[in-house]
Length: 202
Image (tube, rainbow, N blue to C red; front, side, top):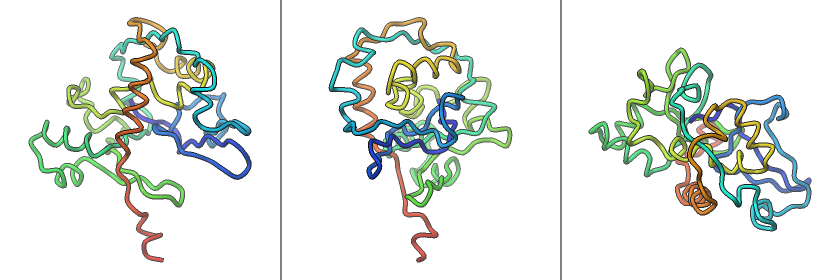
């Protein structure tokens, strides 16, 4: 599953902001052009911990293999060090060789660049070939969809994601422990970044 908007930021008051991981949101008319949610005076963890989250009884999801999230529109699959190691091993490549052949650096509005998989000229994921050609070794972002912070921010954001994904709300039941283990993985496996070359030259 790829991110399909520019970087989204959850803003908690007028002076502080935090970038969630994954931080991008599926395009929807319910988001503003910057893809921002506004939470006034709420600490980050209070969104998920102050009360029982809406997914406390679990959520239904089964991938239908429709491939809509892997094709057609521009998007990003951001990678952790572990993702690159797994994919490089899957393809019998060196770590640095894999990055050079299959990856690109994505600028983040003055912040550090993030490492993402490349995409084809028609916007398909570089590994889409009548399905995911690296499915067993696919990145964490893909494996954990739709259990991302940005989608689990509220029941409303979950419903918005369901508009673009036929598997959300159907199929297998995933309990809260599983969902929160996906969130914990996202925190533990940070995206590879580098200082923006323009900023580095200043």
